[in-house]
Image 1: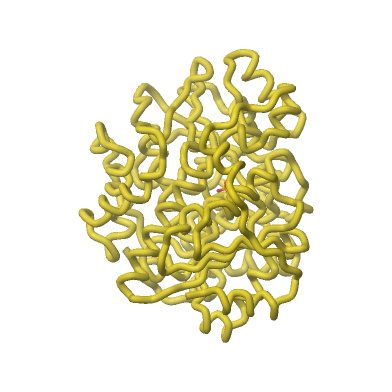
Image 2: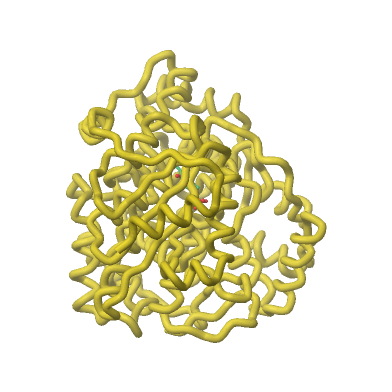
Length: 456
Ligand SMILES: *Cc1c(COP(=O)(O)O)cnc(C)c1O
């Protein structure tokens, strides 16, 4: 499979190069040059990792053969502690929850990050190369990355997180893994400061060459690809009638994977973009105008996002893969903080997608209502998805993606239920682990020296 950039000015690459690069040099995102087709009826009676290899093979085919991919997916997911990696729980007549939080950091990001770590390792070993991954995090991404790469020999990982702005649990998840090549760095500043550090390091081409920087944020195609799999494996569990998905959304990665699943052969009915009060996508579907507002802090922090980067990939399809259109929309966004989507492209999007924004108040009542009715405790991100699912037309079943374990967000749960959720053993262990991290100021030269002196 070849990969092309949504902005049309970077050369076509194979999967491996697109994986290692992350972002295309023209600022666009890599997408497959064509869409394969998958026969989902073939996936019956398979383990998750077998279906993963089956579905991902066409996307990774020029890099890894089927036999090797089977070994790789099995290895990637060995740290899940359940036989059934993605339990499907029925909460109401036609409403289901897909639990995606049984991996090592108790959030769905483990699915993509664990696979990415294996793919990186394989590539770097073949090339006899090392790279340095840097990333900024407000919580879940950093912990999933550190956990996934902690045993990697060829990858150095530096994750910047803002002092006092990530939860105690998230911090412990980043600082207690004991990996020698992972370096959590607490920055005396905000999440935006952390992101600016990462951008500045990437833009410093001599430093970039010196330490071989790599990116693992959610614009990496390898992460999107990994997330396609659980749409297929959950679909096959409910074969009666149309199925829609409600997806708690921030950067539009997880739900884009749902659209890809539909595109390559899964007969999904509706895809519901569920947002918290950071409602840029809900506003966009209503008005056709994508307009950046200030980010609000909510009880579902992993969705507190102003720009949904992966939306660019959907726009590319909505515009019939016309990269000149995407370039001009993105340049409007940069200059005016907004752009207007043409009617035909908006119609294309609305054919598959609905959107709904959920207030803080409605998130809290959803957690408490579901608990009263069923005894089930939702985390605040999942609650946004579940509350939004009431806005979908009622035909068929609706699966809400359960993106995090409630124990990761005890404050929000306590606010809704008056008690904190029980901690799984895995999390208890993390909370008792020894922390190791560095504290630094926003000083690029010092940060560069720190990276230089710690990499292999
Ligand atoms: C990252 C995250 C999301 C949002 O996913 P996107 O792919 O950015 O849309 C939702 N819930 C949780 C718990 C997350 O960590």
